[in-house]
Image (cartoon, rainbow, N blue to C red):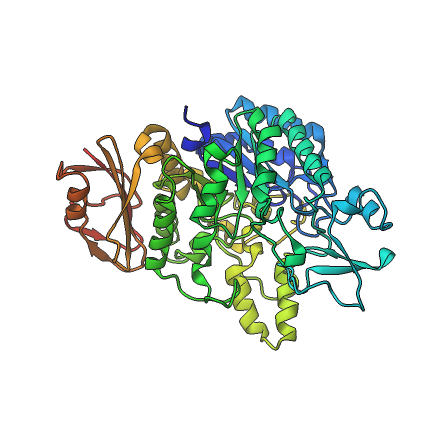
Length: 549
């Protein structure tokens, strides 16, 4: 039997920036409850919440001090239970974000672990002896600098692959795995519809060999989570896996292995950086590379895995500013990117504000930014001799803060996000780009997304159909077909701000045995798109989804 999440669409909420109902400038659980009818109107089946647990917020909630309680700014456990109940009334499942790789240094486990070398919680974390004041090895933190932090109380170092306030857990200790499974079961019993597992590929690390991702016992740990927690109910469980290739993806998501529903893999996300120079380098997107990578993942799984489909999340800049045109053709390019993604095989994810075409923000100085990764990188690069101008260009393009500006609900005070002082800057373009305006306009980006969500429910070919890339060598057009039991859907997208001409009929005839030349339009981002697939004249960022008549 097909899993519910195969024809579903998931909406990610970044709670801090979604909607504030008590005027403290920080989004809260009651704000999410208040907007459930909006999400129901969009048509989504599940809502993934970035972490809502107790946290000192060194990394905006991804540093957890209590997995069984709610962050004060967000509300109470009673609010969380009400969110589960209200979402269920609307047929929406709540996906919980579990940070299984590390905790906050303020978590009681770590507070105990650092007291003495023989403390019972010492082996919950990765400590190594201090030898002549040198760090144990050359492992580096994702957030800059060494991954080892000196711990004075016991004259030793502890591992932190991220912030020094995020000490890594030690899964070589079976008690840690048991604790995490108990936490997962706690939330399943509360009503969670699934989990997103933060940097799950890290939990099998062997730090002494400098192996951080894809360690030899990784899948053993995840399988144990499945057996003792995930298998209890029909859940969606997605893992964040930056280092995965398609073979590793099958290890996670092949149903026979009993691990995860799917993973987030990020190969397409690095296409606008210079190879070998890291995230903060900048280069234009090469569409041929994007077609090759997305198509590779589309064809990777045939009954032995499942894809996630996404452009945006809380760690990534806004896609319309990244691969589209957030100026003249913001609406057209946002719809084009949505059409391209939602026609593919897999479970689509929409990040808050994506459905109205929210854009990156360009703040004037580094002092206006909040994200720890951005701030640490800036300090490190300035010390290396980079200029402020060059760094700010990269930050405007790539900072995680681009995704974290408050949701733009109205053209009123603070975009309708809060009656108080927002915790982070509201994008000044909220006067033009907001939910209220989108809902008034039948041609808005919102209603385009709504149609795409609905089509996945109506067209089985969009869920289960084979994927076939068309016009593989065309540097400007991304086109593909989905084929299932005589049903054919064709998606054709112009990825540029200039007009392009293309023909896909000959290739389609080869795929369909020459059957049928009559195609009707299911969806388009222009009102008068053409239907002659032997000669399509596509306007800037034009995207059309056709169906064999």
